Length: 115
Image (cartoon, rainbow, N blue to C red; front, top):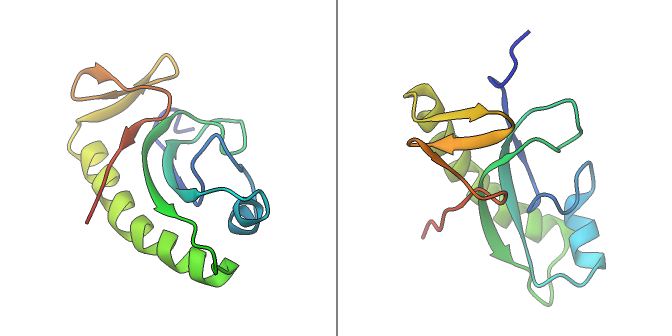
């Protein structure tokens, strides 16, 4: 009903770790970083084109809870930013590609660093 009009936030650096238990999967894999992705929704589970990502380091003593808390902080900054791009008409999806300010983004989207 709303093709190319729905965006989602996902707690991983897609395409890594679609689905659930992303924090535990990143820790178990020994990854050095984890993060959040905002992507357009398609029929594929967490498989739509990535709009933006933000990463956080995985610390030696991280638990699922501590890592999730750091990722959540980034989610609260990144998602409103992307929604504002979409609402203002700067962002759209065309032929399966993400377009921001009339430019096609790479498959990993924009890597936004917020301090």
